[in-house]
Image (cartoon, rainbow, N blue to C red; front, side, top):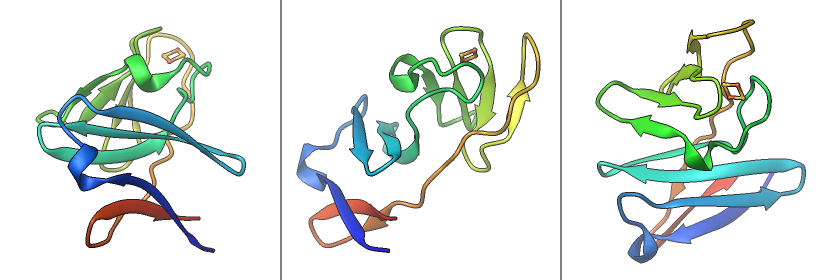
Length: 105
Ligand code: FES
């Protein structure tokens, strides 16, 4: 396991979304309303990119734009499905350092 730097704090802002490919992991770093989330970059339902997803920190949800599935940001649990159920959303712990943040994989 090692630390992978993803971004400097100075580059982050609300609306920030960036995909990172690290080994076999495809990660999406998001900042909305001052909250940062690191999740898998594609929807567990049918793989739609989550870069276009609606992230609602107040409701604690992320909604995939393709079929409207919703997942809990804090647990990854599937909250709402319009078709067959799917597994939960993978989330990753953000590691913050002095000037940057990243992930340990
Ligand atoms: S691919 Fe995301 S809800 Fe279907």
